[in-house]
Length: 293
Image (cartoon, rainbow, N blue to C red; front, top):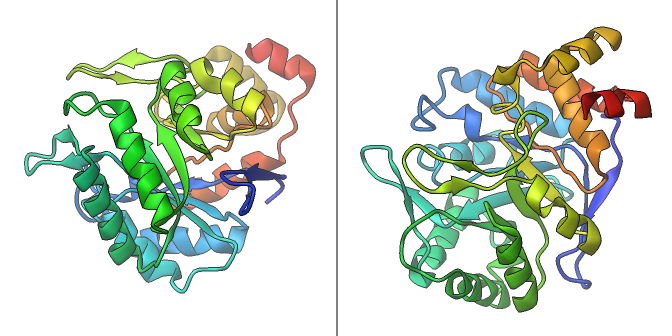
């Protein structure tokens, strides 16, 4: 895999370096991000291929499935390579009807971390994002206080935030070291979007300047899920120029957009995973990037 490393600073005592291309596990679950994958063997193959390909940043959450992706990760690649960073998220949960709910009280966050430790078979989680989900009645600062307390107790090594506004990023940074920010971001969807069921999916464009200024990696989710259906003709043109797929150009654009972006495209297809990794080999010129803007 042809991509440079990026530093996840977190604390100066324990900086992490990972390849600037990761893998998001959400698509490994069943329909509606619920239940077992349609092809369990292929899901395990993808996770094993991550390690073989040099990917050393894997994004998961215990509410994917539920617990499905964590269990697959443990089965496929435990004991874990020393350089592998498993990043999980807390702050949300699923109801039996598959709906998403905030799970952001201090006791909720603690139980989620304990569950992630158990299902991933870890003594400490390297990186945990606090995911903001609308509702719940818990102030952002109260949830972040709980995250930093869990870090002090040694359950978490690095703390990140997800689905956050610029103000929330600044608030979190004033409270402690923020290792990463995970917001929705892709060529076709860069800004916040109101969701049909209420709440908001926060965009990466709005926080990217803060991340760059402070040396904090931006981890984009939904980079292909939101961008691909839009069928941007500019992407098609550049794809033909580089003899690449449109998905590969979407990913190459992220890699060229800023050295502080760490893409984590997800897929349930081994073929598509391998195609995604090849996107790291595409060199977009300044003219290409100007055209895509």
